[in-house]
Picture 1 (tube, helix red, strand yellow):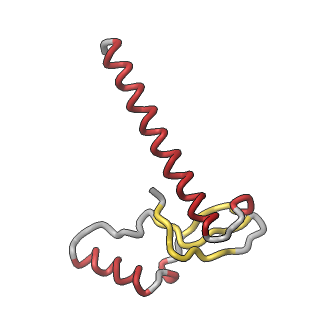
Picture 2 (cartoon, one colour):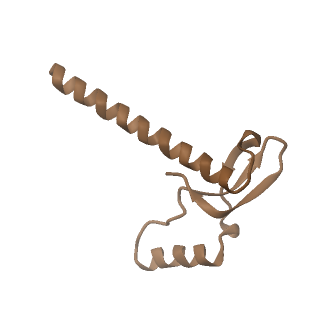
Length: 95
């Protein structure tokens, strides 16, 4: 690999890491916008039974169109450090 190729590969890796970090910050900001203290959140989770009627329709439509499930990488609740659970409405996409 030439020095120019190494530099380019390094820049691309750093951009990918930056995009990942920005997506994570967007997720935390969306949780906070729902009135949840992000300092109390332990983990994100997903329960299919908690999909709203509209989200379920989006999922069914994706299946009919042979597209990926739009909620594969989604969260619809957070579990707090004290063990309580708060439902996220609307569901949030992981990326």
